[in-house]
Length: 201
Image (spheres, helix red, strand yellow):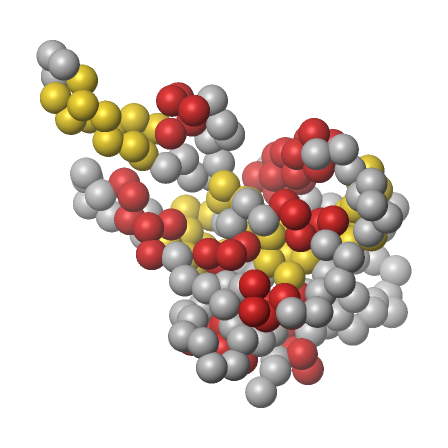
């Protein structure tokens, strides 16, 4: 059974709020990434559940809510990859007319490198590849409310956790899925995100 009934309705109040701290930083990085991809980003005057409207070159228009994951339980030393992150965004805090939940995680994968005089050391991937020292998950609403998605992530909870070294669907497919912004149809999105009937998640 879908959890669509848990989504927030279109807001009737005219309250105005805004992000602070990490939220502002993640929103700025999101805008920069979209513009790098050649998209236009529009910001609603009042923040009532939609952070941005992204318009792509192929004519797609997506409403996006951006959230930043916070650091959860720290694992023992030498287990940096096992860091737990907490996402403070349940289905009930997602508006029914939002297309994508974009989740910012301040995480940089560690790569094992064998140095001649030192041996094996772990180096942040961004220092080797020059890529961003953080990760994004672009999660379509259809995947978040899908009943099978809750086998691994409790999206109904006020806060839910993820571990970068033990990702499951739909987050595997959502990681760095920037092409979702320019996807014209959401038909078959459940299959792309590993939630189609008959397949193991």
